[in-house]
Image (cartoon, rainbow, N blue to C red):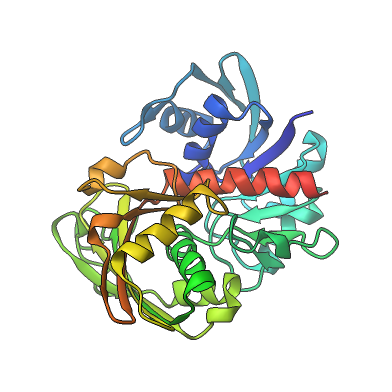
Length: 336
C-alpha cells in the first residue's frame, strides 16, 4: 500500500516534493492538498517552474482539484489547519508546508482535523521532535512524537557535516558563514519594508549579511551534544536556489585536509549515503542545482591548520531539502 499524505501549502518546497514523488516515489501518494491561493494559481505554478522547468507530467486544474496525468488531487482553501478535512481523505500523515504554522500548538490543528501525524517542513522550537535523517532519526518515538519538525535546509547542511566529523574527531566548536540564495522576502526584487533592515534591501543586486540564530537553535535540537558550540551567519546572495556553507571547526585533535575529506567520503558511502556527497571538481553554484544532497562537500576547498579545519558544503536548498522530507515521510510511515 502507498503512503497517503496531505499537504498544507503548495509553495516552493511543496511543489519540489510533488515533482520528486511523481517521478521517483511510487510508494508515496499525495491524496489531498490545501492552499488559500486556489486551483488555478497552484496548478499553474506546479505546471511551470522558473527554476525547475516544466512539470514532468500533464497538469490541469478544475475548480476544486489539481489533476496530474489524469489523477485528481482534491484541493481545499481553508486558512486554519483545524478546518481541513484530513479525516475524509484517509491521510497517513500531513506535511505542514506553509511556513506559518511552525509552532506545536498551531500545527496541532491538523491532528484535530484527523491527521494521525504532522511533519513541519522547517525548523520548529517546540515540535514533539526535530529529526534529521542520518543524524538522529533513531530518537523518533511513535508513542510520543505526533508533530515532527524536519528542521531546515541550512541546518541539514551544517548538521550532516558536523555529525560526520564529530563522530570521528570530536568538534570543540564551529562557526559557519552561509552564502544563502535569496527567496521570497519582501525586499526580494526592490527595497521594501521588513523588520530586518538588511533583508529589506533588494537582494538580487545586493549581498545582505544577517544573523541566523534560528539555525543555532535548530542545531541544538538535532545535535544536543554540540549545543552552544556552533554559531552561524548568513549572507543573502543573488543566486536562484543554491547555497554554500563555509564552516570552520576546531577539532579535539589535529587532522589534515586529506584525512577530513576521507572521513567525509566514508560517511557519504555509509551512514549518510543519501544525504552527504563529496565532490573533487571545482564547482560553482549552478553546478549544484538539482543535486539531491543535504550537503555536497567541495573537497578542493577543505583546509586544515592544526586542529582548525575549514569545510565547504554546497546545497540546493529546495531540491535537496525536499528529498530529506521524502526520506522522513517514508521513515515515519514505516515506524507506525
